[in-house]
Image 1 (tube, rainbow, N blue to C red):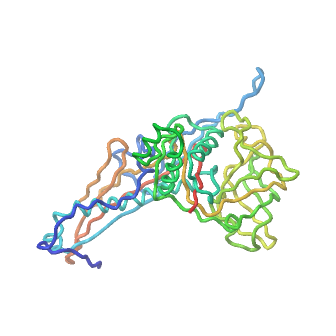
Image 2: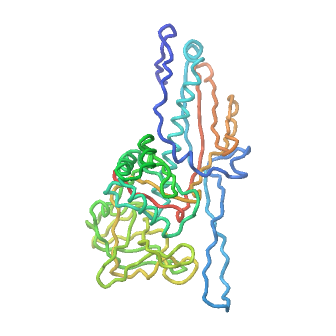
Image 3: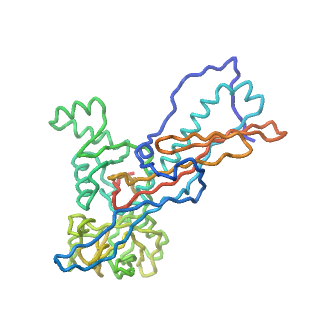
Length: 414
């Protein structure tokens, strides 16, 4: 049984110290409006809600029509995460020490739970993106870099509303300081008073101390230049697996790690530079072709590694065409090293569900639910029969997802 450390009433006074809170930028800006999901019907782990994505089409330069399939695109959000904060007292401790102090315990417990949700939601910047800006080594320290990141984000195609960026809290001072050196009196006055980036280039910028750190495989940290050997395609002709040569070491189990990010190199002798097509319209963009590894991959004795990738890279005409030229042997890629995962997104593509949990029968239970978002938290308590042990539990379940094509990772140095 845990040992509680409580103060005697005659020597104890509340200090009213504030909690050492973490920044909850992702929770506060997530899209949480799920009709018929975050409602009054209790949910369980594994429950799923689907939402639609905009359909994709192609256009022919002719009045002679060629009918194409109408494909309804959907993405799922599954309640897969759970967390609880629990503590206990004896009957004497509860009566004489903490009965009037329970709100303070509860406030700290909920802040602890919130941090678990926030850090988990922030991890989507690692797992649900394939495009990125930055090399993971060079600090993001100027407004010019922010403008370049937004330009690359929008060049591929982006929703026009609700553009939001999330950077490390330690990045903000460098950027603001660079802005104070520019001759922009009104913006400089605002920033010098707030020391915040705020709105810049039609994007709201938020800071977080809970960004996910991605641990890269050997190739990323060794600065390897990998060369395409062969590819495997899906039924539509999109490349879903690439075998590379030129690994840093043979028989390396950590050659590539899941969510490593890759970019095709320009200027390779005998090869055509490759670019993404715009997501809508399928027109050549200026965005370099990037992708992520979907699973760990080990190198072979011949210093080759086979990587499963996302998205499928397709040069053949069709609704899913997304690159300007086919991927062929001899093309080269580089891999990001260890980095911290910032994020830019637009159009509210970050979804978070925190549905209602059922009552914990036979224990007294309270479930509090936000009427606007549906986010809820459960609290219940009880005693262990004959053991002079009273327990209090705060718990939640949640699910989250991020629509890949509406977002781009910002690779920040660790």
